[in-house]
Image: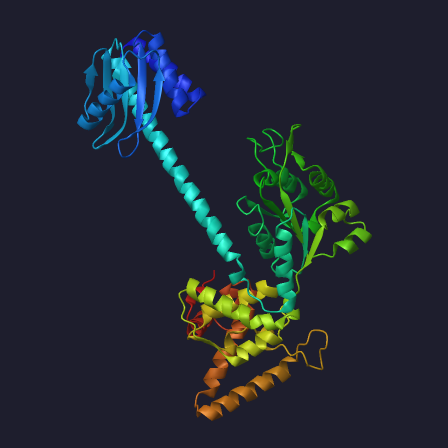
Length: 499
């Protein structure tokens, strides 16, 4: 390559770095080659997959009309070989059967310059095509995910028949069409984010982003950067500008979960955002306008937090435009069977398990239990039962002891409703014995031992952080004996594989 071509390549590279778009890069390359006296004009005729003309990028005064250019392009495209017509030289850009474009150069002074431009333009065409395909794939994936979310949070997938729950859903649908800020209150695990997503998916902003933020999981400094973003150099580790969650939610909805946990200083900044709908990134002075709907959620009673001075009254009133109260699961026991069935189907499919029935004792126990962790606790319980089930039926021995032993009518513990261990154990033994007599069994001891050893080992392993050596020491048996018993008791060995 001659010195003049090396200089041309360096200049084209600089122009490409300055503006890497296809059109700007081709224009700059043709202009620089013309300025170096290597050609008088040039046209890059970009082709579609079917060989049709997609776009023309031209520089300089053409010496022939467009009809002649198209005829020359067709000749080169079909022959996959260079061709000339008068002062015009046409080069195909592509290999094998695929021609990405045809480069027509007029007054070409050096064939090597034409080959250099053809090689560069071919690389750029391929890069642009790959980027276009990736963008199309991302758009398709984004559309698919949005459709899945819409399906997931459609009314068909809302599990609950109780009047209290259906009222909340109805209120969520009503408020969705508005732009009002919503405050959702409910205990942990009741599904506050699900209600927030329902509001978003049924709102005019459904095609915009839904950005959830757990305000209670981050320190004040991290939360500030997470919500509002930062500029390069704003603090140690800020190596580049970063967009915050509010900006990411522009045109959509931001969900501020556990809003009652934020500090007084952060409350002041959030109040300004709600009032002015504008933010400043950390370390920046530029004000950025927003178009965001805010939905907040808390498990605290914010009125009491305001009275005790822990939450700003003005922020509370800004958030509490529309108030939705999600009832706890213990107040809608009629929803429990529907939730159990929903989660059994979900986790059986996910874990490739075949569950055909749930015993009456299991369902009765789950309806009696108050579920202090609400739907989340119920979901975790059902998932564990499905994973641990050795047969196609969910039986009482798979239930956690706290659920199985709960008795709302126990007289010796009216606060928590837990019967004494001895009385509950006695009742269970009588029930097992009666069942064994009715079926004519001769293995009562082994059946009972297996059921209760499972709960004992589970409790000990939980207490010892799943350390087998510590658990064996606490039980007074060897580690090998414990491992052998766990192997006999569980069909799902990975549940007991601990360090």
